[in-house]
Image (cartoon, rainbow over all chains, first blue to last red):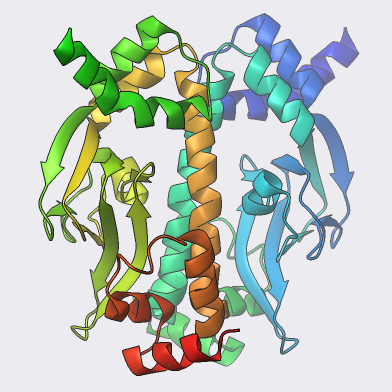
Length: 199
Length: 199
């Protein structure tokens, strides 16, 4: 009984996130919990390495990840973050099995529920609203990806910093300042100036 | 009977495209054909204007469209093309009802089968594999959008020209050279030099 309770707790946050998109019955919740495997990651462990093909989607139960890429010049660029309650994946690499141009690395010890490509196809087929879930998640990722791309090339660093603290209000204390500076697109001293100028 | 025949012919290409993704029965094909309305566009007519919200998806039955945006500097940038047998839409604007940053304009007289946001939700619900269709289309659009974005910032003009003629072998004669040059990211004389250098 205790084990069942623990197991259920492990999947609580995932079930809450899925419930934002679709309805599932108890039988389907059981199927879903057999398709996602909990994995523990230490700080600095990689969920995905640049150069590999992304073959799974993660649901961050606890912890924090950073998306980054090494440019040809050797410079490291922070592209995004992912926190508890969010899915993590290089979706493009996952969908067309292309080589990933980004790393996904844990900034903190993290628990991630991992589903393979094959198991995700099973979820789509075995859960009545599984396809709808896949469609809605894809639509959300599409809009998020397009906004991110536009922001990279259009927004000023100060705007990008404001978006960061708006979207991730809790992360300012958890993410080293030099990663935030890289995400915003400036050197750390410039980020300090941006922060001082904010009301 | 003749009318029915005509009607069926109007939707033939759409049904073939949908069949690449999902199975539909005759009843579902009828539903789909009531949800898409055929519309005729003259050359230079707009399917979508920059600044409007994109409220519909089009399936290009006949013709050719060009995606373009006017930059703050006033310069016009050709972003993409769409031809017979392809869906056309500003998907980001369509999904989150945001203002479109691009125009979709007909380069030729075109027949486009148009489905509204509301009718597309009906298709998802009323066709057994409708949600799966939505998921697969979204996945394809996601991968295409990401590749396009990367190409804009990474590829050299000659590579972009080669991609254009590979992806759209039939369009070289149908698209004015200055639009192709804009898509490739060069002035027309540079495009001529790129073409001369090709084997």
